Length: 221
Image (cartoon, rainbow, N blue to C red):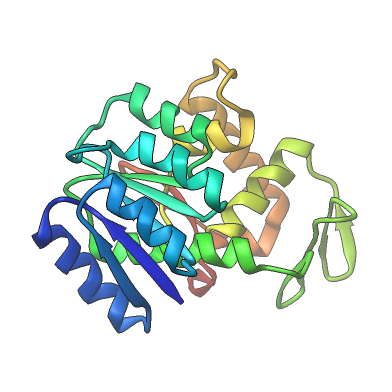
């Protein structure tokens, strides 16, 4: 797999490179948005990790130009924490937004989750006697269909697609309910509670991450 790291800070690029190389990624680097565009033109890139604030061309502008060339999964990595910036990125079509300072291990987990979603061909998820059929929009335990609401189903699908990644309540609201939804964190908590009840003996697959949100993790049961 080939990753393009775009950041004008060499130290940041080196840290990300060190962790991704351990996961057998081939790394390409760029210091500016313009360099990033040129790299996309000349390389077959699987994922981009892109800073916003860079000289010559900012990350958002670079991403718009890159999308004209190829639809490459992209994570924005930025010191800017304003909600406006995050929503702008997601509206443009980015896959994830991580703020600095960041955990390199978390970044790697997010990279893997995004590539897993992008490359995933199967429409059925299985774990022991639990089965999720995306096409039939159905959940089964011990071959018995479990009735859950459409939002619970969408929530479970998104959690599974981001296995081992801690997802904030805000991310879940944006991805599952949509940007135009004006609910709050309690909406997510309520649906997680209902979903866990319906998952029965598999309820602990959904782990609460204190101060953050939730994570789907199979090793918990």
